[in-house]
Image 1 (spheres, rainbow, N blue to C red):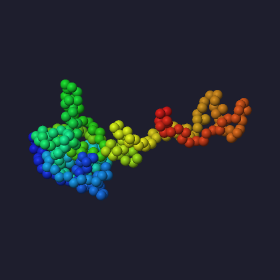
Image 2: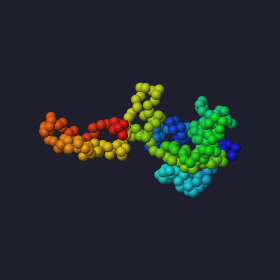
Image 3: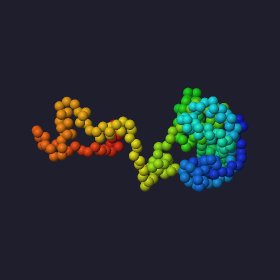
Image 4: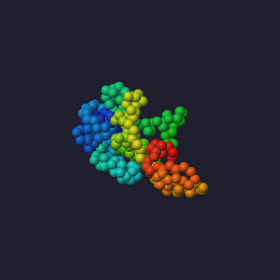
Length: 276
């Protein structure tokens, strides 16, 4: 990318979320100058960094989205990414100064590669060393589908194709964007602190009962109706008698029949799922 002229040195200032590791645009800042994902106050950062010339790919990305309407799926996420693109692209920081962890910039050892660029580039570069002694690039790239979460749509639908274009590499054929697994109405995330940390045993995992699957709902309905009508053979008549017997009534041939249990959720959702 640098050899093709898309990397330059400059100064960047903007609102930064340390948990997202991302500079927020004016459209992404929530009420009270907070991060819309982590609900923490943003900090003002000013750094001398290396930059990626993202603005140079405005037209090429528009052509990609308009010429391939199924590039991002589902359609709602396509519209979200296309709307971000329509707002205009700005050059973004490629490196960070003063961070003692990360991959050093090859031509500037005082800076490290911005963590998101490192993560995105690994989709492609990992294929050269994923299997010892083999290069899997031609076999697996470009990817037919990349599966991502909705909160990192901007990085994968805008930044990632531009990085590949800058390096003269093919972009993935499709991106599929999934939603969140919610816990107490919030995204399940270590940065939010609602996922059990194995090194923090004093912080329990908050559990949320999952909704019943259709098969489980049908099983619950059958249990509430009763199985008397479904019994076949010699026990069918006995089952009908048990259902119709009033409280305290005696059977002709034996002791009083037990009262039929009232319909209801006799078992927990977890037990029902295990039985299914």
